[in-house]
Length: 243
Ligand code: 0O2
Image (tube, rainbow, N blue to C red):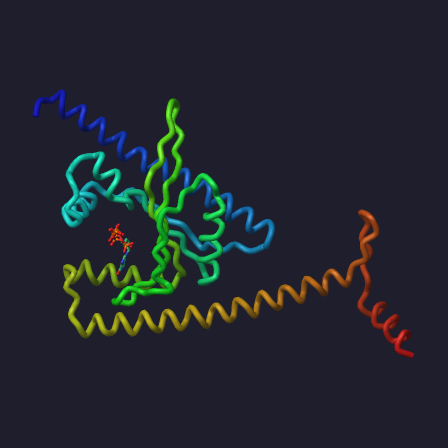
């Protein structure tokens, strides 16, 4: 290959990778707005943290070979749908589905596929919710829809997945059976912990709802003016009605 061709190819590749970077930045802005809006309205933040990455060329190549798709940029663009990858980590399982619902409401974000490994864990115990989406990226003279994968999971699911990933790396994807069994047990324990935390979350929400109702009772609204109503005042009035 001559130098001119090589430089052209490098330019094409840079442009190719750049689109995924832009798609992730676009997604990140959207998620950040959702997060802030949720915080304002519900005084609660469902997102612990977010990470994102553009898949490395090495990793793209391995996946192209594994999936046996043609080695052209067009084919890679169409067939490898997780070159742009975002991971959203939440505290509770209900948050995972709340975030999914919020994303579904964004009309220009196309959710093409949802892989629910929470309802249907992988045989090794892996749990997470994966959304395969098409993100609109606006360039100066055109708009492109870019494939991206959004993984949404709880802190504990993420902890399990990172340990399993490290072990696979260490054992070169040939983890000994006893360790695989232990990992599966750990995945079940994680699912149990998530269910317990979810119950605590429900209790906290119920408590908050009662407190809100109570706070409302403690105030009298007259047009734009608010008057504090001491509980004692209410109690005395109620007592006098009873007599
Ligand atoms: P990396 O390094 O995270 O990018 P498909 O694309 O549908 O043909 P694929 O890619 O197997 O097939 O889809 P799937 O099942 O949705 O998995 C995509 C990603 O989910 C993986 O990306 C991992 O990040 C994660 N994942 C899936 N299964 C497991 C698992 O058993 N353990 C862990 N730790 N992570 C998992 P990559 O490309 O494999 O790697």
